[in-house]
Length: 106
Image 1 (cartoon, one colour):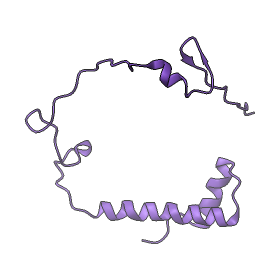
Image 2 (cartoon, helix red, strand yellow; image 1 turned 45 degrees about the vertical axis):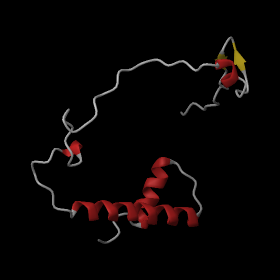
Image 3 (cartoon, one colour; image 1 turned 60 degrees about the vertical axis):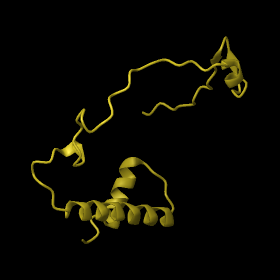
């Protein structure tokens, strides 16, 4: 398989994404993307039964062969104060998360 992501295509994608990459970073990422596409192409060569459902990964879920789905149960931690001691800032039993700076795009 030839490289589907040429330097020209990659440079165009980098420009669209407004990325700033050094030439070494760009070439590394381009090679990695092409490696991923090669791996996907290799997987596509594996013959599959056309009746195999796409999401089943070849192993169907049935109650006879799989564990039953667990009930969604709440199990509180026995010592929440101990957990909160590791947090940088807390308020009334809640962890304070710092605001993430953002920038509005034009």
